[in-house]
Amino acid sequence: MVNNPYYIFPTKDAINFATDSTGTVVNPNKVKASQDEVLSNSASEHKITFTYGKAHAHTVVEVRGMLKKGLA
Image (cartoon, rainbow, N blue to C red):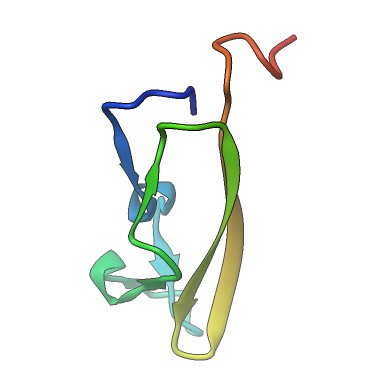
């Protein structure tokens, strides 16, 4: 994500779908996130943990300081 002082990223937007232990899709609103949103007003990395029951997953949301930083 590019540095943007006018945008707040809702972390649940990083979830395409979640399933329970049987493979059944669950409502994303039942998945808990370690933080609800990421401010994109400064360059930084945010490790987000998602949990549903005993299951958990991690992702990193990176806010880039410059538009082309990290792109090849």
